[in-house]
Amino acid sequence: MTSDETITLSVQDGGTTEAARAATAIARELVREGVAVVPGGGTPPDGSKGGSHLEPGSLTIGAAGSLQAFRSISRVVTGAIRRGLVGRISLADGDRKLVVDSSSRESEEALVAWLHRSKIVDPDGK
Image (cartoon, rainbow, N blue to C red):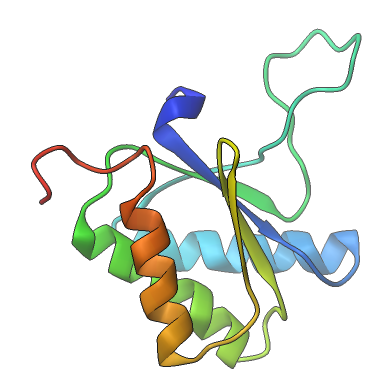
């Protein structure tokens, strides 16, 4: 997966351990929904030899997205907030960023609309 085909999701509250646990729980839910997920995110520190960098509390959502996948992502993200697993989640797609801190219907709809404008939209719209 290239960075043009991914969105980075990051848990924005709690300590490193809590953020990592929350991101892992969110990743499991996304995978159950059929969304492609890989742990990590971020850029490697200067001087590092590796090509990827694991950042606690982050994960990468990849591949071409469909409206159904976007709805699944939105439900999982707002559900995590509703259950108190996290208080705030940020998503980044290149220079575009979105912070979700509410589990309202309006937040779900705004997240689906934001995802739909992302670079990972399936050209067939499936």
